[in-house]
Length: 155
Image (cartoon, rainbow, N blue to C red; front, side, top):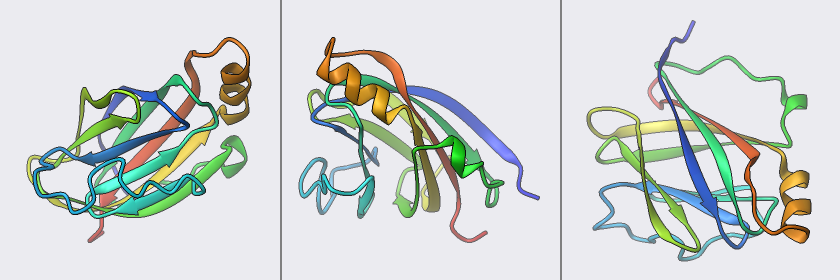
């Protein structure tokens, strides 16, 4: 059975219904965030990059990140509005959070001490509430919540 190696919480400032995760060492990114962002897909990828669409236009989403040593147990899909999986390569083991509004944020997600290939499962809940908030008050904090689970692609 897989073991949880580490976990952390970060805030993602959502702008224009989107945020992204990108390899921290981004000097040689072939398609840097937000170029070629697919607004019609909950989770889309480019090399070294994960693009995530949100239910709300402008808000701060709560993102809980888990790093596992193997495939984590499946969550109850009924508890989540969206669930998707992808592969992700990191040259540094560090991932930066990006906003459509503000660019690269200060928080870094630590996957490992060095690079590697990962599999990630992205869960989201609170999409309708974030959409309603965007149409009403405008912004909010933690209404939309994400769980990102990373594990080595080789496991």
